[in-house]
Length: 155
Image 1 (cartoon, rainbow, N blue to C red):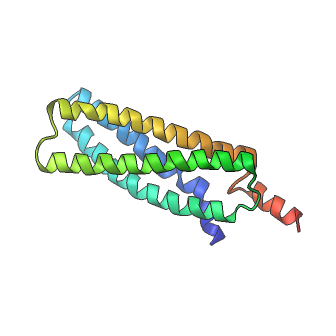
Image 2 (image 1 turned 60 degrees about the vertical axis):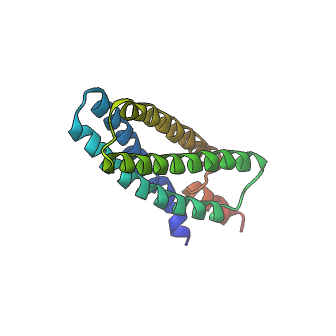
């Protein structure tokens, strides 16, 4: 299933874009009290979470396929995986809480404004995950043709 590994650098851009856009729309919708923005944000949140699970699937395969792990690359991978897990479960948590609050018609007041903070924290987690993922690609060629070329040259 090497094709899944090769898809990881492509697939991850969808949840990143969707969840950053979710965060921005959530903030704008709350600050300017625009229901259309908060409703759109919620839809992007759900689609972004679905995208995260495809990113995890392809990322796990990229980890399995890469044959040149050393201490430096393993440390960066561990940091990438740590932030990816936090990001995944953080946005799932936001979606569950937000769904509950909307259904119970309690998405208002201070609770509603706390989602501005949640959105900002989510962007931070996405950023940290992306930084470590970028290092894996740029420094070690994980999931790239560079990796495949190195593997061919070793045989």
